[in-house]
Image (cartoon, rainbow, N blue to C red; front, top):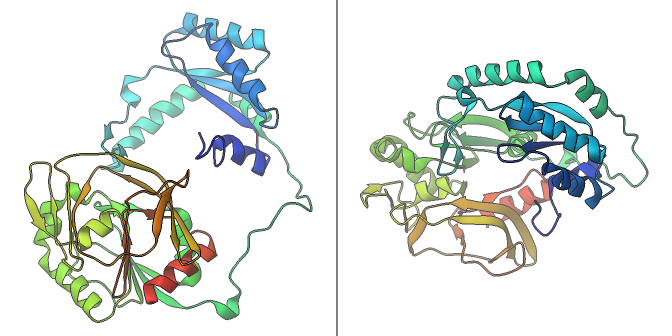
Length: 347
């Protein structure tokens, strides 16, 4: 789905990138009646090049036969199916899939790979999805930062079990801007010397005791900020910079204290959606996805935040000293987005 109709959807991306599309359909509670669903996807937008379908969570070979017949009757290629696999289930948590102990999922990947190899026609799949696209004059190349205006920044990224929501494009942006090193607010005593500290989102609410008890790291970050250090903090990182975080039972855990805000998990409420923040004629983009709430906010804020339909939402963009912080996960893979963020961090 897109932000506004199909805008930003997988379908729109497939059209922009000229890529073939394979539908993966959950078949747990459907048989031949999947035909109108597939027919709808096939005919709704003729610019989306749907080459076939794979069915997931199929009950049995006889169940799959009904699905095959549906594909035959609407003239859609069926590449095969994956059975219901109890041993391949990945547990979920309040912010999506659980990413703790990622090594345990290697066995799951092996189970899925074996299943796909057994019941999916991989040769047909690869044949249908192989393509060559020749760039046309209307294709716009990706701009890069001219070498003569690049800044050589020392950037420290907080990354551990508590802070790990980091776009790969964001890391690429940082690497284009300078030298990137990492630190762990859970385990390290201090942050390395840097021009910018990046505190991304993650699961701080799952590690409140450890984060709160690591007083050396909290003091290091507070001292860095007091000495005009520059910080970009998002969601969980924003919560960590506050005075405290309250857990689901109402117990408060002291945090860095650089911002006069408190956040709480006690009354869970989903805040979700694409966001735009307009600041003096410039627009920052990102998304919001959290269950915690802001229970105290005595900080300076800038800009106006709206959702994808341009309706005003209460999400704040905090600007104090060298800190720029928000519940938003900013997207700044695009150079101009980072330029705006960096400008406001330094104002």
